[in-house]
Image (cartoon, rainbow, N blue to C red):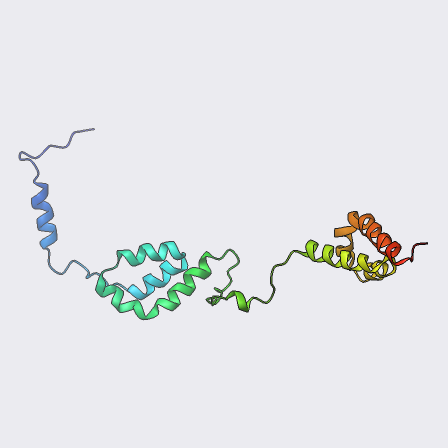
Length: 162
């Protein structure tokens, strides 16, 4: 295979590029950026992606789309949801007085009630025990012999021992 002859002068790459760039009519103008569409696309990728996109915008670009922030936030939150659920509404703070259920010690309440019934005697303890829900009875079942002993002592003090 014959070798191609090399030119006598070295190629001037910079000059070739300048000549290429100077050619008129051969270039297409860059399309305008659709920031709103880009923002929607970024929001669909989740909150982190949208925040990174937002940081990359100039002030004027942000001003152009700031009116759509609720849409972007909801889209980003929905994208981050593993079940594609809409975001929950903002919860209002609840004061202690507004709490529907106050935490309490169920065992302590049952123990107090059992002691009160035992002080009335065996019959009252048996009647109270029948009112218990199964879970409550199971919770204090280990103490039933103690309650029964207290009830029998109360009966003896009243002269009702058998």
